[in-house]
Length: 172
Ligand SMILES: O=C(O)CCC(=O)C(=O)O
Image (cartoon, helix red, strand yellow):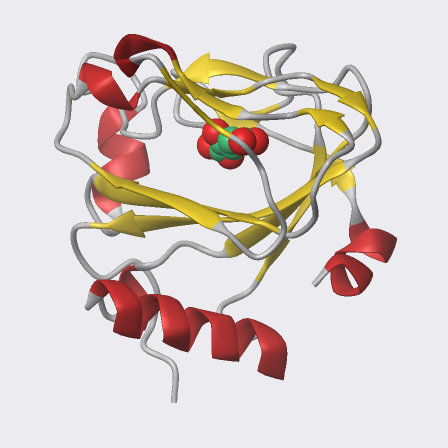
């Protein structure tokens, strides 16, 4: 997964209140999005996620692979879209609201880079081959989370966001 992503990394974007994807100081990693079913490995991963969470493949957004270098982070945020933000109807027009997130750790950073849930006092330590999954309803404050700064080494993750309805054309 890391080898697939490396040549295509670009500064990560966030979904801004406007509904557009923008570079933001809160998210300083680099990443790449893979189209649904883009490679056999991506397809395998999508199928496993769909089977594990019993959510059809087409409810999933594209898998993103991210790399954080020392000092890079993703400040605390929610993955569900805020109904009060101006871009809400645009970002939910296709697939509806996000209902769950999966963060898969592709390596073990030397120091730092935990996934912190400040409202429930939990920090998940990134360990290669493990993942953190959380589902939510709109407004769920327990799911506030941050990718804490990496202090030493690199942090690689793959993320998957799931929608309440079909988000992409079903794969063959
Ligand atoms: O880097 C992490 O541990 C969390 C990533 C994250 O919050 C996200 O991509 O939404």
